Image (tube, rainbow, N blue to C red):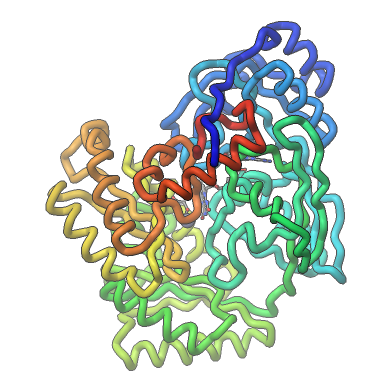
Length: 482
Ligand code: FAD
Ligand code: MLT
Ligand code: ZN
């Protein structure tokens, strides 16, 4: 099964004639070719990869997208789909060959409709996540996908990476929130799979193939998403603890106490928060003393504010009794809750400002997380004495961002030369613990080769067979993921 994939070759039409035809499809103002104008589309969010392109093309409709992809297929021009360009594994920018077209979906940004009885919203791929959350809220519903990049990432990118974020514990990841997709395939055909059905067993699940495919099989142009009732109340608390093991015990207790009401459970090591307050001093908040670990937890309630607060108080007092907690700050206003979440959401930015670092996005069975951290910390400290670990993430999903910064006094550029060795320790450890080396960010260019170490030959062969069948010319986001 699974033939070798073809190398994409830029055809003779990647010149002026090709560009003219692109202009004919999307209008002259939406074919960008100047280096300065293309620059924001060519470098990834972390500033680690810069590619080149024939052009950045910005279609405004599904039909324009289909005509553009058909033209690229005919001319053998590779296509790099791009939404908000917030991807963290170098999946949304082209390589340096300069042969590809970046297809920016940001003009495809209409909310097509809300169905309050079906509890769904139909949106185009370029809608910004926050705008979808707001549209749902205006309709008296919740769209629960939530992540720190929500002000700039698009739903197309969220689906293409099967994004996770901070509400997976209760609502699932992007895949769980999507009922149907509209797709332009690698040949430029439109597949209207915008079915808002909760049950549909009519063959292979093509929707789920495009979700998480990182744009390697086609372009998602629209989606039907699930909506939920808006909670009546939300309470947030930041608690200090002595260890990841205590955090794990608190998670079990919180699930027993709050059941489905527990909607967020984020672990943050003290060093993660120190980085935030170092680079954003205005975010400092007062805990009575310092702790090695913190958990930000959120309870959503369908009854009332008083009921939610009652649950949180019961949880905190039981946890104090069991000596799991040192200190707790309970947000008493929406502004305070936002300030606590803001601390959590600024860790990525703070670490980026601090300097170059080695990023990991691993998951292990929740029950083994504390042991994973203990063992992997020790291995890293032995190999790289003084290494500064920025450990934070979605503890409730077993998903850690286990990032490594240089020891004090070691230049970042020198430190990241050791990233292969650091990856080996972290990823081998993840694998030993039965985990995944990419829990929510995808593979992109960053982990495309790394994954071959951890997936079986049969799994890799089936993935290659799917890619070859749906994109036989290897034109859709070539070199990413597979
Ligand atoms: P892009 O970065 O533009 O693209 C990402 C991938 O999707 C690429 O492979 C691209 O080719 C493909 N793609 C984009 N649009 C389409 C489309 N319409 N059809 C087909 N393929 C497409 N991720 C998480 O999972 N959880 C988090 O908590 C989280 N937090 C983040 C915080 C910060 C500060 C940042 C910078 C990133 C974070 N991310 C997180 C990663 C990133 O935001 C998500 O992966 C996001 O879903 C990407 O959306 P985007 O529109 O920016 O996509
Ligand atoms: C997060 O949870 O904040 C993100 O996935 C971003 C990151 O890993 O840095
Ligand atoms: Zn995350």
